[in-house]
Amino acid sequence: MTDFGKGDTSWFTHDRFGMFIHWGLYSMPGRHEWVRNYEEIPDEAYEKYFERFNPDLFDPKEWAKAAREAGMKYFVITTKHHEGFCMWDSRYTDYKVTNTPCGRDLLREIVDAFRAEGLRVGFYHSLIDWHHPDFTVDSVHPLRNRPDREALNAGRDMARYREYLHNQVRELLTGYGKIDIIWFDFSYPLWESGKGHLDWDSEGLVKMIRELQPGIIINNRLDLPGAGDVTTPEQNTPDDPVTDADGNPVVWEGCQTVSGSGGYHRDELTWKSMKQCIDLLINHVCRNGNLLMNVGPTSRGYLDGRAMERLKGFAEWMKYHSRSIYGCGMAEGLLEPRDCRYTFNPETNRLYLHIMNWPFKHVTLKGLSGKVAYAQFLHDGSEVKIRDAADRAVHSGLLHKTVQGAVTLELPVVKPPVEVPVIEIFLK
Ligand code: GLC
Image 1 (cartoon, rainbow, N blue to C red):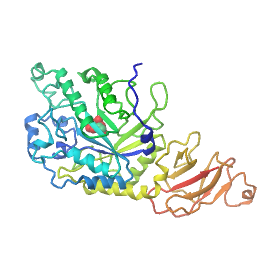
Image 2 (spheres, protein in one colour; image 1 turned 90 degrees about the horizontal axis):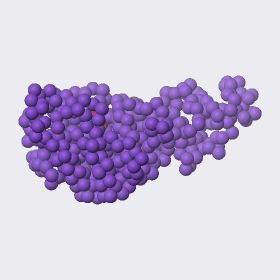
Image 3 (cartoon, rainbow, N blue to C red; image 1 turned 120 degrees about the vertical axis):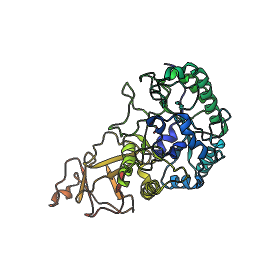
Image 4 (cartoon, protein in one colour; image 1 turned 30 degrees about the vertical axis):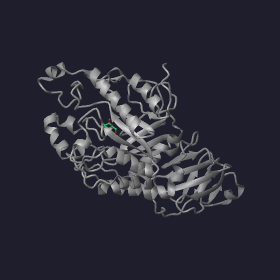
């Protein structure tokens, strides 16, 4: 297999939690970032957004602060989504933010603000482009059902689009300092009139990227097996750690949304509860994954109340529980108790028991007899008493039968006042 080089994922698998931001013209219709596709909107009809894009309440420092407080260690921002609109001052197109009433390079301001808060920088960049005149009309293009589709394609030249794509990626990777992640979206070679690595010249792209930004993490959506550093399932939580085709574990990151849309969607109602959000984070890390949690700012440039509420909820939980997330992954070989998830930090040799659904007075940790030195709640550092099945004194206890080979933790009847309580277990 071709050697495509490798990105540095050591920080990534340690940090575990990032913010995804979908922001573009689509925040104005506020009906999903795919609105052009869903509603088959032609260029002329989409112009009204370009002519009026002016996020007057934009303050990237607020976003960055909210992200840092939520415990997020990196962020990935849409430089260009499928609609083709560029959030930076690209010299290769007029279809960019600096030509709207906004008139500023928003990408630069966002990057600066997040860096100042200590977060690493990732760029989402759409391979697909529904605005570029050389991007052929295929089965996902907004103009796909036009009777003159073939005629529309007559003059289009993907070679020119490819050059545009490469030029813009070079521009993004040379004009904004160190970029930690480039997140391409997406290839669809098997779809009707789909596109894949030859359309993008993925090989050439990867080669250029590795030269420009050594260490950068490239995701797996270039249709180039072996070239991606990170596998990116979305809108579902894999049941098990993600593997490659041969069953080998891979670095993976689930991208999820706080509501059912990436871009700001005013009327979408499937907002996840705070409990669901925290569960998502735990369920990713306990399977060796990262969580990239998306928010979609409004067209006026702020994160609406519903999004801020979720970020604050993460902040509240992470303030006390980040130790069970950073540096942690799957607790291999251990059977999780009912309604619980483990994460494990191999460096500190501490095991974290996340109690997703509060039980009555006890939780039994199978296979840990003789292995637990101490246990405490993470939120307040208060001791959790342990009863080891191997400890003879325990056998005289009438209230609770010990399970062979297990350790039983004594819990308060009332669930501690945190979304998901965590017990930190110091292993011997
Ligand atoms: C899917 C969505 C796209 C989004 C991406 C990342 O590909 O269709 O809009 O940008 O996931 O979440």
